[in-house]
Length: 205
Ligand SMILES: Nc1nc2c(ncn2[C@@H]2O[C@H](COP(=O)(O)OP(=O)(O)O)[C@@H](O)[C@H]2O)c(=O)[nH]1
Ligand SMILES: [Mg+2]
Image (cartoon, rainbow, N blue to C red; front, side):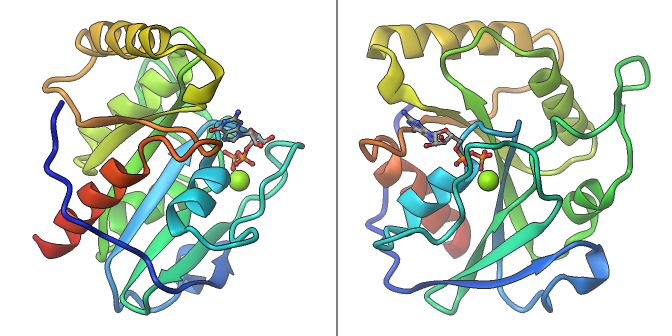
């Protein structure tokens, strides 16, 4: 996939607030892009990498799945990056392809200023049922999303590409259409330009 990345740079990035219910989220006001995925997939690391702030903005943890908070980060006082809790926790009934309506799914479906969500997938793993289920649910719920294959520094470019191809093959049996995707590394900045370019286009649209 070739995307023309408009140059995009974040000048100021600040932690704004945490919310543990829909009604404690900050006033919509500015557009938001959210990040979701299994605990430990690299959401917080990616947010730190994209925002380019020296030091941590989002807390990177080695003990996954502790918090059930939505964290809001304000970029250039004009738009937000949103760190959603890992969905290893969400109760998914495969049969009904329904997700327990916790406040994260409420946020995704009801948040009026949400431009879209990035679903993070570990590029080292074969397609995981929980990721496929979650993506199917997003598609059915008509939440706009793109995929980001994380931790690409841990494997070769060819191996990462294989993961992507395999994932899309399995996903095509589950949803219609081909969502956009990126390959990222919080370690070496891989994917930063492309993801920010994509965000820039979405903010302008
Ligand atoms: N090598 C490598 N490690 C990463 C990358 N992203 C995250 N990690 C590590 O994976 C663990 C979980 O990262 P974190 O950002 O807290 O994941 P989260 O639970 O999804 O927010 C931490 O030990 C990170 O240092 C990456 O791109 N490359
Ligand atoms: Mg995190």
